[in-house]
Length: 171
Image 1 (cartoon, one colour):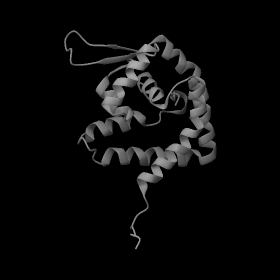
Image 2 (cartoon, one colour):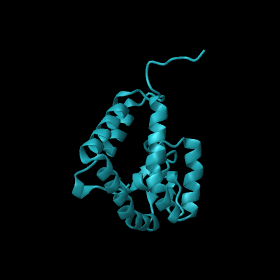
Image 3 (cartoon, one colour):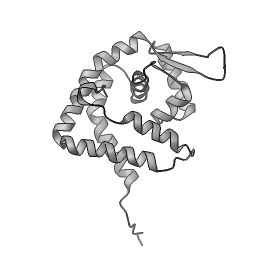
Image 4 (tube, one colour):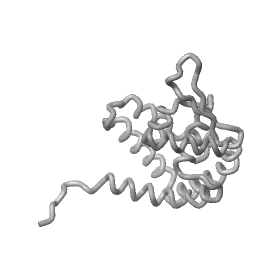
């Protein structure tokens, strides 16, 4: 006997939508030998005015588990994409910053990623794309996280909110 559910599998639909969407961007990242995780970290750091964050903040904002993040950051530092440092005042913290190499990658990749978003906007329509952003931001803000950090989820949603067209940043 098969079990009947009252709702569609939203988690599966979101994963399928993510895979479809990433199909637009993977070829670009592959050209620059970047993984999706590396690009998420670079893009997240690039969005910060200081171009730096604590490793724990990166893990939360980029949805990368801390044990995995450690290895990703080690490889990124080895490849000259980030710098990691511990502040003298608090050796428990690990601060991650972009390097000139990764900033140059953003400058090279950004216009190509933005072109893909323009294509997506043309296919979906501006209002549908904006509504999608709003619905996802709302879902992130109101649903509890496993770690109980609703405030962090709301802050992450705020960071993802689209800016005015002229001020948009790449992927």
